[in-house]
Length: 256
Image (tube, rainbow, N blue to C red; front, top):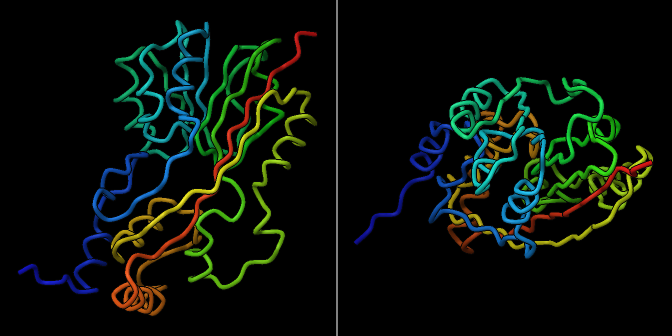
């Protein structure tokens, strides 16, 4: 008979697990997330295969970009977190991609009109004017982004009910307006809400350590009472269910 693991064991394991990169294999058997119907990695790979020069912004550990079957002749990626810069370099350099260390809020370190394709999966923020600047006329920005109130069932367990302006942040309509204000034409925009299940409290801890903007400043010690109450709830009721929000946006720079 399997002995149930204690709260302390689950939390200690998750608190010591590495969180570098954008690999979510640690969650296997401990959390599930429904995937968007559009298949971002496949669609990104198709566009990369047709590009001459491409840039992947906030590439994380490079795992998503590395899944592309074919890289364009010129392939660059940016990343701001030093552990991820090293990880992405090791993964992408053999594929011919150059990884540039660049802070998320800094201007992109590339010339005007340098790329015909810019991609980004789950950027923290989208700097539309910089994207428009580095795209050549006719170039495309293609991105899957986190939508409004994503996994807020979990966020609000720790932080309490969030105000409307916070819940509506990252709305796809705002992304459309910002893209158009930067001079881009939005040629595609789709949004979905997707079921997420956390099967044990360790999965919650690992998620909040890895996706650091969900509960800013999260540490086990700081939120220990809330973690314990959630563990007890999951023990009594089963998996904790939340819903992620995702949208896919494609914007093009006019040729003239």
